[in-house]
Length: 436
Ligand code: GLY
Ligand code: MN
Ligand code: MN
Image (cartoon, rainbow, N blue to C red; front, top):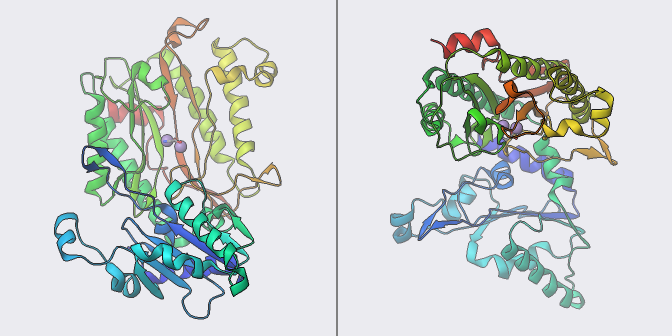
């Protein structure tokens, strides 16, 4: 979908941010065994995908902004007709150069022998320590070898710098092309949620809805879910990361689905909560109306200059006022905010960065303080309330109810654009769809 010039421009922007004294190593994560000799489906590390679009495992990208010739160096799996017959096509050395923009490309097996020369004498080595112990050891070995060769004119980098410093700042600010892809991911995701609302009724299994959501993603060209889909009916909706998805919907249940389509390496992240039988009960409405009001108010507040912490504090206050009014918490409101009593029913954050990773990269603070939003950032807004079925001292009518409402919001110069506005969340709309 993206033209090679887009990746070239990203690499150029990254190299400008690095400056001539720095070198960056970006690498795919190892393939993982699922069981026996089966592997989990490989999905490229987002940093590698961002800079090259190269989809294969065992890929290392070395960017050298200060080099005369070979500024973009890739190590990839070489062509191998016999292995390709078993495991699929490879771009190979030539493909990396001709289709993926490498100035030079080498077989993955030559990484260790070449890495030292590629990073020698730079000031900063930008590399994500701690993700892949095997690669950490290989980088450390290259540094150790360079320490011994200083008299021959090759010294190790002065510092190892986390990719958050430069690369993840670029990924945090979405370009026009990235927003277009996220918009598509959002549109497919909205359609999938509506398909689940239409199909779900008492007796439907949670996994059927998961499969329908996945099918809808794939039917529209998505890669599948960008994170494990959550389908929680009844009290399962009160478990934040419920992914078993194995129960049947019962009459009168609320159904919480948190699912986002990954499209060209970018994922949406949307949650909707709706009545399995087509109508909210009065008690469900009490909780749902409160979460929806808090969610809409927080979305409305998104604009440049506001911080994610501002949004969170606003949501906490509104939800806590509502929880006191509903009898979930004892007042006063300020005391329950002060002593974090609200966390019994609202225990997660309101927002996170969204992009290639569902919890996308980018620093959340500047100088120890929450950073102001800027145009081009994409965030989620996702308040919820979760009343465990055995929570002590709560009104009977609210036990076992879980509600979350989550949209994906682009910060614009003038305020914001809700990328998932097409996904219904008003009570009348949900009842019309679910009751049909
Ligand atoms: N689906 C993960 C989240 O909402 O943060
Ligand atoms: Mn989220
Ligand atoms: Mn989510």
